[in-house]
Image (tube, rainbow, N blue to C red; front, side, top):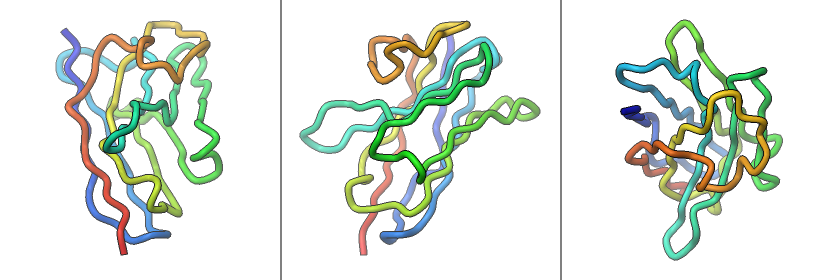
Length: 127
């Protein structure tokens, strides 16, 4: 069973940057589309970004376009989410999730496209 682990969360001031990492134990991430979701208190879980394994196509929520970048480090079998110019609305628990092999990207933002999830990492943006 695929087990995902997120790292890199923490406390950051508005305008600051963080980089999240997603790794797996036992199975290569090359076999999966990988997405990042987040959930703020009292809100639904929302898709932040996704990268397919078929062709490396990337997708972003409108709220993070131009600020966040998702990428694969194949040598380290890791997916990163570089987050720049963070604002208060980015405060949430961020989850790494695995989508289907050869995922087309259709509906990437829906949590129902992903079968395996990490435990989440907290990001707090505060002055």
